[in-house]
Image (cartoon, rainbow, N blue to C red):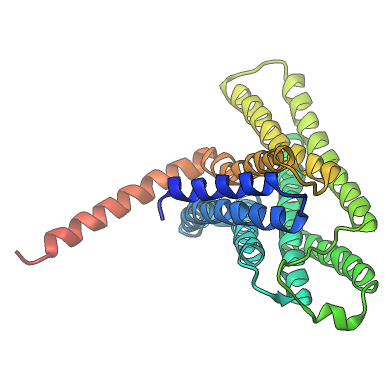
Amino acid sequence: MSPFCWWSQVALKIMNLSSDHCNISDWLRLEATVKASVYVVAFFFATFVTVIIITIVLQNSKLRREVRHILLCHHLLCISSYCGLGVVFQGMRALLANSPVLVCWVVFGVQLSVGEGILFTLALMAVNTYLAVCWPLKSLSFVDSVKYRILAASWIIIIFKNVCLFLIESANPPRVAVFKSEPLCPVILNGPPARAVGMVFLFFLLSIILTSYFLIYREGKRAGHFNRSNIKAKKTVLIHLVQMSLHVIPILIFVGLGKMCGVFFFALNLVLFGVFAFAQCLNPLIYGLWNRELQSGLYHWMCCQLWCGHIMNDREPV
């Protein structure tokens, strides 16, 4: 089916839904259909760039030892996993897979945890950059010795938080209802306690990121001159802040609006989701290929691939 025909069918469904009475299930299924399609594109793009960057890092012993590249690879893996789980969950809703409620909750809960891992890794990357800029001599050995323990601790915090919230929300329905099959997969961690804890968690990580960037900017300004390196660092901070706003603003509006019927809210929801998905696709490029060392590694990797391909073609029998 061509993209034009697919979008025509989506538009026809929207017109039919808008003429009928408000049925939130129909709107959610249509929304899931569009989101699953967007997640497929984002997953393949993010995974493609992630594989290239991780291959470059693994082939270079110097890059492999640096904390910032370890965090970058972890961040990119979280993005690819998040998009892949989005394809699974939204696909289950769009296809009315009639899956058990517990399976839907687990898939959505794991996706939400990986999404929080993305933001947690961004906070760790910002703190690591601050330490490297403001405390270059004292922080190098310390950060190198605790990098894996900090990553493990961050995942323990995320999993422990979400498991506790999962147990709180799953205690409300009867146990039989948890194993009951539902055509439209319900979400979990959507109640008032989960939303409140999620917002606190979001603003806590954002405060760490913004504080780190502010201290980096102040340190560069305190040096008294903005040479070429400082100017590029300033541009990098501004780009990261714009990228962060593309992540956070859609989430805040999502939480504030909730789920409503109507063409306007459907279109607004998809626009916000499109901005969020676009930010996910930009992450590997901004945090990965913006790096000068990775750009050099990508150039050598592409030259090596072209050279190997040329050698293989020369060896083919005539």
